[in-house]
Length: 293
Image (cartoon, rainbow, N blue to C red; front, side, top):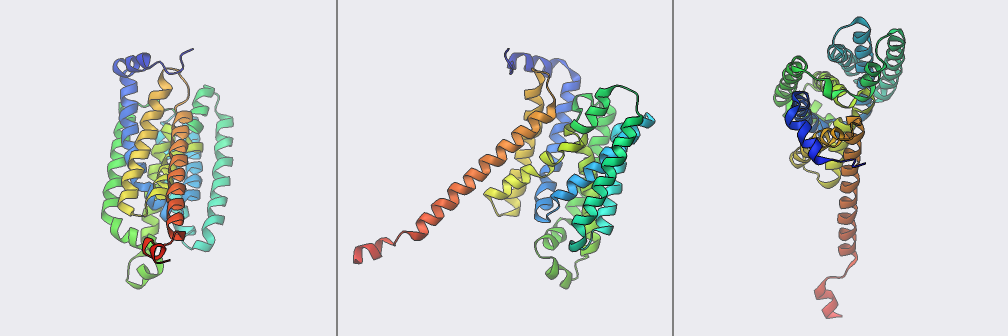
């Protein structure tokens, strides 16, 4: 069997409007995840993304049970989780325990709601692993509006947020409203996470929200270059995952996570090779010193 039949893949892309809608949604999501990712990594909120995605799962499961759009339920659940994390986990010492509490609660409630749902098992599975191919024009409108809101708010608070992320104590001393920014950023993470649930599912949101940024951070320390690389990596993962999944008809999330992980491994190898060359140059004597001896 030809697993990657690119002729068939091109045929599906050009003939099916659902696939084209999915690619547009992935393109938008790659941009949002790529921009948010470096700040999430810098603020050490990777675990918070996972906790938020569990409440998005709870909201999606409740929406499925009530017969309304899963994306709306996921959005409400993720925003509720973000507010709880932003308010209860404002102190660094409390953050991990608060995330653990919210994560376990969300997962438990989500499983309970799904146990009451008697519809197609594929709908249950889709909340956990994503169903981007089912995105229609109504979903896409919500996708676009939510993404524009996230990017617009982030543009407004980016400079003080970056300052507070780099050095919280100095930012507080300079009068930056760090606590307010923490809650605002948690809300942006919540909305972004809810968008990712439709693509890779609640279990694999980290693959798009964190892994591309973590890979970029391995090869550059510049916030601007890290953001650009994070966007590129997230776009390659999201678009590449959809394209590669079309011909074999396999879950998109498997390819998105695999590409994202591969990029991370390559970036780690590049960083390792760069550090090795730096260490070698540091131990080699200078040419003038060698000539003198």
